[in-house]
Image (cartoon, rainbow, N blue to C red; front, side, top):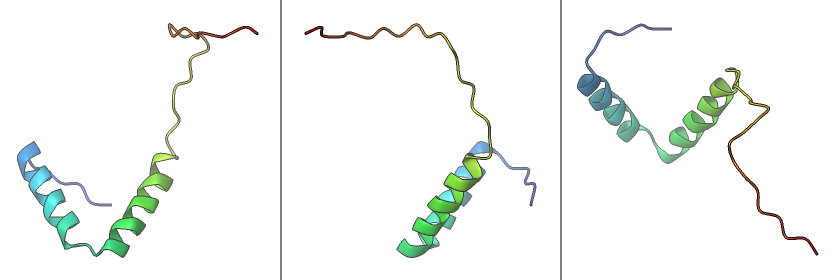
Length: 58
């Protein structure tokens, strides 16, 4: 793991350059690895929601 100290603009430019240098296959593999890494983080699941559901009763 590498820690970088850079501005947001520098970080974005570096990530765009890295992405443009990947082949389509490498981009797909990068995406799959990213999905695996993201799943390691626990998400907050709320029991109650402010959303409402419209149901059609037959």
